[in-house]
Image 1 (cartoon, rainbow, N blue to C red):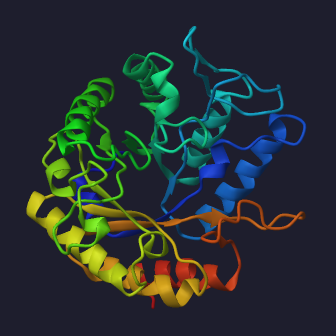
Image 2 (cartoon, rainbow, N blue to C red):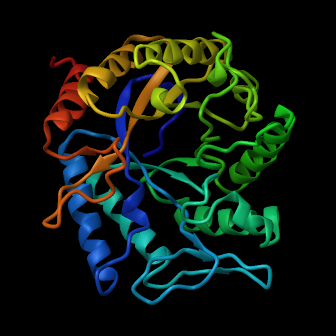
Length: 331
């Protein structure tokens, strides 16, 4: 099964679950695979269609055999780990998604330093090593029905740069990905900074991004938006304005928008449910992906970054069950 752009306009909801592909098992990779199985079972039973999971786990020094890593970046020569604690973990996730009818959005690199980051490539032959890794991942999974879209990076920025820096990189890189997997969708993964609609920080181009300009890139199939008002000195009510501003740009470009990450600190339901409603009801929006899915374990709630929505909690009922029901016309 392949998704096309027309299908994106049928609104969907999804989740980001970064830890699934990068966590380490307690003594071996079996623990990681067990966790993946449980999480993907719960995702599928929740009615979520898509997961956004990290396709990267870069290190600058090779860890112990009980740690999961996908690529070692070094100025002396980088190594892609295809072993049991490497891309075979991602294999397990992709295979599990296929079995459960889940689709995946897979970013190739993080702008931030977590699990590598763009800066780590600067000492590892930069773009050539990045493309080498992109080639390895795309070639490995391009025939999988689980792939929804390839994402060039998570939250790429170039503070103080002319927007053409990221524009040219995104145009060339998305064209390269399309050459490897012509039938698959590609997106940039930016936060949506630099869009018409206001004068405050998020609307400006100080991070080197121009949302509308990036949408003109032929080999990018849809736009991405992130929404964290508490990080940007904006009100939670402002989030609805942020969504509609991008939806207008997407309508003009003839491409759908994905509210790819969003989160609030405290009062999750009261603050985020209105964003979901705005996304569902606004022309130009194709879906949303909340940040982030979490599972309560015997040791407690891991990966709690204040934004995590834990499976089975009250916030999960509101932001997942009720949202899915509304999309399906059952609410």
